[in-house]
Length: 330
Image 1 (spheres, rainbow, N blue to C red):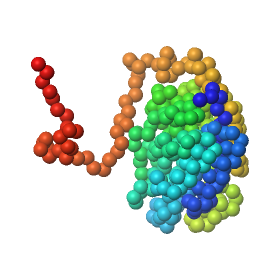
Image 2: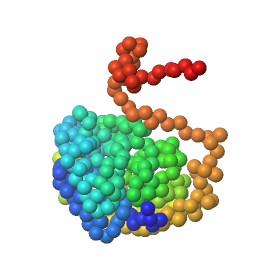
Image 3: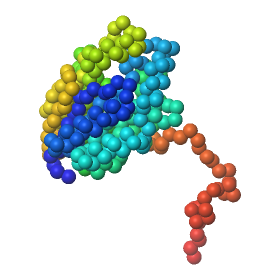
Image 4: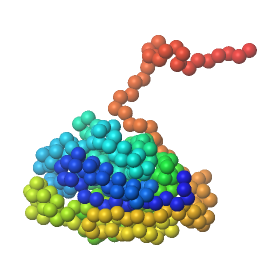
């Protein structure tokens, strides 16, 4: 792995109501970035097929039609769509972090996918707690994916949107030694105050983690905003502003961007020597920590709806060779 990684934060528009169309746009962008020798890229939160803006505009009893449409267009993991993204990552020799609406049976989740440069899906994690109105749309995630992962571009951690307001979730990745933090937000909503809060969050995390933060938000053009307002029966709505696509270094300084309007990408070189330069002064997982006084407990057990408990050894379904045995040694 090179001590310098070329990274991109991508501000891109979805193809409204189309999983296939949005995946095609993402694949095309990955290939374009590959031609620029980008090694790592972050795409926005649930950009495939699109963020559920309707849930912010409609009361719960009115959103059935839009909710069902999103379920039908959401991504199954694995699927042809994830294979296409993985293949694009492989062709571009790029590590790709991207947000999707993941369908699992009759439920959907806010999921972050991480593809290595060989196209392998190396992490699938779900947002721990959907925010406010999002809880009507998405299920909750578990902490099995709340960890940093080694990749061809370095050690990567991922969080979505207001997970950055959860200090313990962020510290889980800090303690796991992330070098690049992939931050995803929806963008194109809430206006300038949302962009300002995003900036504060990602710059603070870069300082505390002593890592690079690559942050991506999505963009809705005027026609897309109008379409969503029409389809939700909303006379108006805050579906503009709120974009802050940028790259931050371990000193909390913005080294690329921000991009706050329109589609595009922010590209910057991440010099990993800056990580140790920062940690020499403040290492939150090392010399600046006090684990005997303050520590974090995480249950990374994958959540399951069914737990089988055998009542006795005669009910075990394991073959004899797989069962634990005790041997007395004389």
